[in-house]
Amino acid sequence: MPRVIIHDAIDEAGLDLLAGRADLEVCEVARDDDERLRREIADADGLILRYLPLGTEALAASTRLKVIARHGVGCDNIDLATATAMKIPVATVGDANAVTVAELTLYFMLALAKRSRHYDESVRQGDFLVREAADHLELYGRTVLIIGFGRIGRRVAARCRAFEMSVECCDPYIPQQDIVDAGCTPVASLAEALPRADYVSVHVPLNDETRHLIDRTVLNSMKPGTIFVNAARGPIVDGEALHEALEAGHLAGAGLDVFDEEPPRLDDPLLRHPSTLLMPHMGGSSRGAFVRMATRCAQNVLDALDGRLDSSFVINPEALE
Image (cartoon, rainbow, N blue to C red; front, side, top):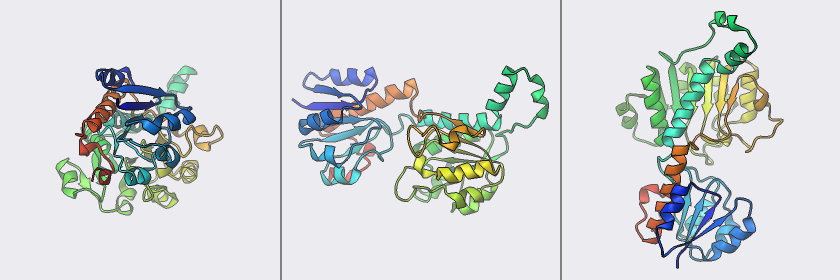
């Protein structure tokens, strides 16, 4: 009988989908039980994995794994090279949480532009006349630079256009006409676009090319007063350089859902800076997204076991060859 491991909890909707198959055994492994994971994976046919690391040692223990269903869209927690070499396809949830991350991105932009932390605290302390400062910003008529025009970046762009923003997009890995067709302006390089962007939002995967993509040089190239958002992966941004840019007043604010180290250290200066707005890597974790991701993971596992895994969800298609 095929066995499926669920490493960490998923929504009941995904469990119900798996339970509908009488010919399937499901094994749930707690997030901190690495020893049991290595033991159970030995004869598992499928694995549903959330954000926990899956390294070479665990993969090497498997003997008949047919799919790793990632409960998300990133794969930086998986030894992808080993999985590919072992002909194990890694399937993500596609656009199941794209809307959720796009909405969080707009929340960051609006909350920072409207200085929500500052004004909320002022009202609570009895300073109602703080309104006279009239120092909050608008999205209307401003320019946003979206770095990465994938499933999430496209949705962010559509929502920014609804706010009547000028939307510029930098993504050299897609047909530039796709950006034009979406009503946006393609830009060839960050250096060209950064000096005119009022808002900058990052939506690229984490890999060797994008690690510290947003470094000191890039941050210093941004227009003074820029609002910066990262709802992708923490190490895409040089956190120390970002703090320096905020301390210098070069940036108006930064919205961060992700960090170099998660959870971040309590002495991380970004946690104490008044111009940051922070979330605990929850961009794709709404109730609706949890249901969609769980059911997509379960379906990817079932499809792989049935020999009809949709290749559009597979991030290492070489494993299918």
